[in-house]
Structure formats: structure tokens, C-alpha cells
Image (cartoon, rainbow, N blue to C red):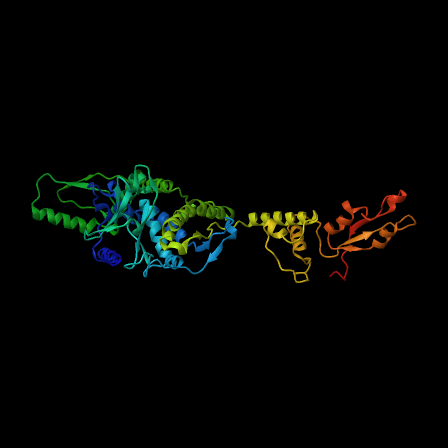
Length: 497
């Protein structure tokens, strides 16, 4: 089956290459209509090369989807995404990275996404070696050549692939993975946005053709040469040839016409009156609306700055790229991986997040996590586990500060980060808080002994001197005296530098 189907693919490619293309507007569909009336899947596929706005949309979405990287993971018992283990060697991963000998994954995904955006569906045909159930190749097949075969009991019993020469090849359910945008009228086929804008595509195409003809036909939409008597064939041919020689083409525009007997009847409509520029712009808006895409997404930048550009990039990834990736992900995990049997149990494909990072959001998140780490340490929680609890990376402690001005130790580092990012403004470098005791005859011995003691940061100092005043080990209260000791910031000395 795989060899027969591959031969049909090669035959299709050869036919598409050798045959002379037919102008889009002249192609007929199954209902006998022309461009806008062609509701067939083939007509939808050809529309990409007929309208510039549609080409830009499909090209941008398919490229963005194809550029995203994929990984294979082993699911964690906890069910959490962060606990998964990456799998770097597996037959399914090899197949996805190289679906067939002629396509890398990037080209495979791009071709599949083009089919999906134009027709609302993209079938993948699975090729296997005789006697083996494990897939060896995958091919993105034109949707107009795949026909689902409904079944009254099983809902679907298979598919039929029709080659360019009319050969029909039956395919089993496990030989096709069929991705589609659900069609409310047909559960077996997908739904294309193009069907909702066929008249608009017609308008755009005809407006372009009219503009082209405007310059070819002596820069005039048309007119009539009127004669009082019937011309012979020789006279007619001579008049036609002379008129074309003197007035046809842009270089001959606005030349004075000389008529010996006939009369020119002007039937022109000015380019300004037709307002074709505005017409084509309105058509482009309708095409973008059908695909839910903005001007910025296809390179039409007006009144945009860096902030809005970053927002537009993130919006495109969230609203356009991720939905397409999710559809592919579901097909890989629910249909492709089970074909590899027990070796694929517990595995899942997942894509790398295409949404670009937001620097402001990342800075705010880092500040909040560092503040949380410092608060947990001040509250007395053990340093081990604090960073992981707040989502900060573990940092090995080698016994020395990692950088000038940053204290050693993972929790002290988190506290320092909070201070540097504005979360706790009074967190300072090491040994920057000093005990100042009021020394006189009423000073107790613990306060006197701790006078001048240095602390690394405010958290450590306030642990012994809550609120910055009053030593927790002071015994003056036993004699009716309140503690008069406090902790203050040290001034930076040359030794600190």
C-alpha cells in the first residue's frame, strides 16, 4: 500500500509540474462556475496564489506554526508539566523530525498548515512496511484528493485517495490522520474561511484584472468606432491593426486618433470614479476578518511603536499560532503515538511556547518571588526548599559571594535580589547593620556584650532587635529598666570596599 500510494504522489507531482497552468479565473469547478463560484477544495487551494492578502495571511500563519520546536516528554506521576522528563530517543520522535525522505518537519508542518488554512482540513497519510504496524513515513496530502467513507454503524470505515490520473486507492483508518476545523453541516469534512469570502475574493481579482487592462488597452476602459456603412473583412482587419499599432499600450496613451470616415463614441469611466484602490482595500479587510488577523500580523505597520509591536507579536502567537499547534498536538498524542504500541505509553508530544517573553512581566515576577523568599526566611522557614517553593532556581553555595555586594547563600541571594529590584529597599550588602547600646551604669551585661555587633542584613538584625530597638536577650526589665539598644545601618567604610 505504501509503495502504491507513494507512486500516486510522485505521479501527482509530475503532473502538476509538466502541465501548463490554467489561469485561475478560467478554471471551472464541479458546479460549472468560475473563480468566486468555485467552492471545491481545489478552488480553495488555488485561491492562495490569486489574492495577495490571502497569500500573506496563509504564508505568515503556516511559517509561524512550522518554526516552533517540538519535544517528546515522559509524563510525571504528579501530573505536573514541570515534573516531566524529556525523551531524546524514540522512533516517534525520529518520525516527527523527519516525516518522510523528502520533507523535514518544518516543511511538513508548513504544507499541512497551508492545507488547513485554505480548506479547513489537512490529511496525513501514514506509510508502513509490509508486515509491520509501526509508521515509517508521513505525507501531507492535498485535501481535495482524500474522500472520507462514511459508515452507518462505525461512523467512518476509511478513506479513498484519488490520484491525478483517476486511480482510486482505498486507505484504512490507521493509514490516515485527518485534522480539520469542524464543519457544522458535515462531520466528515472541514470548513474553510474562504467559503465566507468568495465574493470578496472575486472583487479583488476582477479589480486587479481591470486595472491591468486599463493600462494595456491604451489607458482607456473602452469605446466604440462607429461607421455608417458595413466594412469588408479586409477593411476591418486593416482598421484593427492600425488602431492597435497606434493606440494600444501605455506608451501610446493619449495619442490623437485620426479617423478617415468613422466616428469615435466615448464610453469611458475614469479611474478616479471607479475608486479601485479603495475597493481593493475594503476587500483586503474582509479577507483579514475571515481569518481573524490584524494588519500588523501580515506586515502592514501603521502608527506602531516598540511596545505595541511586542504586544502584536504576543497576540499573534496566542491567537493564531497556538490554536494551530494545539490541533497538531492532539493529533500526535491521540492518533500517532498509539501506533507505536507499548513503547509510547506515558509519552506525549508538546511544543515550545511561541509567545515571546514580556520583560516587564518577567521583572515583576522575579521581584515578587524574591520578596516571597525573603519573607519566608524572616518568618523562620528553613533555607532549604524556600527557593523552589517560590519558583526561583536553586543556586549552589560555594562559601563566598557570587558577586560584589551580593551576600553568600541561596536565601541571602534572594533577599539581595529583592533589594536590588526594589522589593525590600533596605536589604544591603554583608555586615551592614551594627548594634548601638546606650552605655551607662544601668546597661545590662548582655546588652554591653552585644554592643558593636554586626549583622549581615536587616532581617538578621531585626530578629535580635524587633522593630530595630530592644535586645531580645536584655535582662534590664528584671530591674525595671527598658532596653535602650538599637540597630543602625553602618556607614560604608574603606574595609567594606
